[in-house]
Image 1 (cartoon, rainbow, N blue to C red):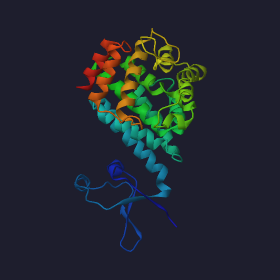
Image 2 (cartoon, rainbow, N blue to C red; image 1 turned 60 degrees about the vertical axis):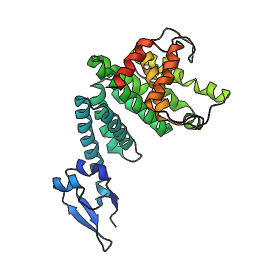
Image 3 (cartoon, rainbow, N blue to C red; image 1 turned 90 degrees about the vertical axis):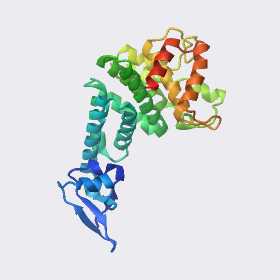
Image 4 (tube, rainbow, N blue to C red; image 1 turned 120 degrees about the vertical axis):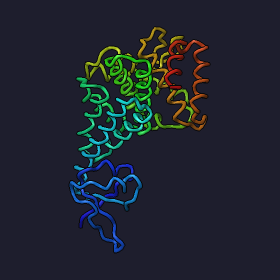
Amino acid sequence: MAEYIIVKKSQVSLFKTIPFYYHTQNGDYALYKKKGDRLDESRLQKNRYPDLYILDADRDEAMAELIAALNKDFEKKITDGKLKEVRHTLEYIIEEALTPGQENGMNALPETLNILLGRYQNDNQAMEYLRKIDSNSPILIKHTVNVTALTLQFCFFHKFSESDTRQLAMAALLHDVGSSQIDKNLVETSKRLTDEQFKIYTTHPKMGHDMIIQSTDFNTAIQKVALEHHERIDGTGYPSGLKRLTSYSQLIGLIDSYESLTYRAKLFRKAKKPFDTLNLIKEEVLRGKFSKELFKKFTSCLVK
C-alpha cells in the first residue's frame, strides 16, 4: 500500500514538479496536481487548498526540489540584504538537510554553503563539521546559524569586502565545532554548570581548534576564532587567558555572547530582549572585556 507524507503549508509554493495528493472524505488519497503542473497562484496566495501530500516514493525527488528552491530564495535574500530572513532560511535549510534519512537534502547542502561562502575550497569539510554539530545538539546548530547570520549582518552593514565577509561567515560556522565533542547534556543543560562541568566545557575551544588544523587547511584566522572566541581582551576569558586577540576572534566572541543571552533561556536566567542584552554587554565593555569601538559598530548594525 502506498504511503503518503503531508506537505508543510510553508513549503507548498516551493514545489513545482512533484505531484500532490489530497485526503478524500472516503479516507482515500486522490491526485490533486499532476507531475509538472503548477498550483494556481491565486489559491496559493489565499491558502485556498486542502492539506496536500506527496508519495513516500517521491520523497528524495521532493527533498532535492525543496532544497534547490530554498537555496534560490536564500541567494536572493542575501543579495537583497534581508538579513533577518537570511537567518531563518539558513536555519531551515540546514535543519531540513540534516534530517536523518534525507540523503538528497545532504547532497544539496553544499550548494547552500557555496551561496554563503563562495566556491570555498573547504566547504565540504565545513558541511561535515555541521553534521557533527547537529548530531550532538540541535540547540548548538541553531546557535551556530544565529551567530553566522548576525556576523553577515555586521559585515553587510559595515560594507566588508566579499572575501572578508565569506571568511568571517566560515569562521562563524565553525567557531563552536569543538562543542560537538562535549557531552550533549553539558551543552544543552539549562542549569548553571558546576565547577567541574565548567572545566570540561572550557576545553571545547582547544578541541575545535585542533579539529580544524588536523583535518583541513583553513587559514589561521578561522583556526584562531575557534580557539579564541571565549577569550577577552582583559585576559579573563578561556581557555588561555589571552589579551591579544585577532579582530575576527573579538567580533565572533562578542556576537557569540549576544546570541547566547538573547536567544537561549536557562533556569537561572530568562532569554533577554536585545536592548537588555546590549546593556549587559555594555557593562562588560566598561570592565574592559570587549572593545568599545567594536561594541559601537555591532550595536549600529542591529538598529539598521
